[in-house]
Image (tube, rainbow, N blue to C red; front, side):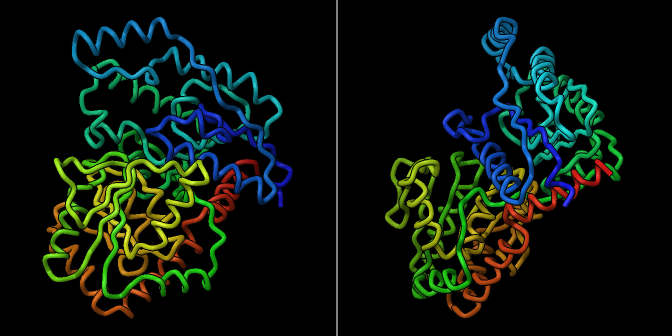
Length: 391
């Protein structure tokens, strides 16, 4: 294949192979960069790593941060500062001379001012501009940052030969906001940020080990409110009230309550980068009947793919890019953001009380992971895109 001799400049602001330097709020994005790189190398791609990239301009950005945050009480983000983009671009340009093509599996920030002779491809989960009013951290922006975000993304998108998004939602919103030519846009889902060599035999054993007279729900999310932890808790409460013994395990964040109900167990943060953390996460996920993630805002949701890799169906709200991952009654169920708690309970109850239907759903969930929600599939798909840019 042509890609085996193609040299790819792999651009990330972080070190894709060193999780200790990843931003704790961007572990999904950074993890994607790591697993994609690993899968690309596995199938013979030649990667030249451009990252981590040094951050500069601290004096200017620190003074602006002080002004906006402390005086105007508005949010200012350093990564949206033109000086930062320019410095990123200069450092990248010095390191890509021998590459055939440039791939950035992150966002527009590092390539907003990048001038290069090689074809440039961006693969991201969403245009940042489309997250304004969607994610809380972008709801109180100062006018300068708000304006710079659109300038940054328009500049980056215009430079790219190909734009790849992880979901139809992200692609369509970016096309509309930035007036993009749909012919330059592709959709390729990301995979599960988890090691998986599980077979159908393994999944059958895992399904068989799950008790049919109880229901174990797993919630995963650092941000309790945004991820819908309160909804997950109420679903577990009402299932118990209906006479279906239910346990909710919460990983990542603790309920915003004075006391946690007896049917819930808040584990707190589990670091999958450690052996202990990874084994704990794998065990809790493999034991669960469903992953429940009723997010209020979500660009993608790697954990949904991760759940499917264990044959665990997912229950999620149809927001952001989640709809590209979840297919009703195949690997879980999508609920509207206005869905009643009873809607979740009815869906769960039917499958727990008719357990053969649950087993079928769990099996097809694993098949979804194997066929389209893993990094090997994603890596082959992006290599086809890169190959087309070099024809």
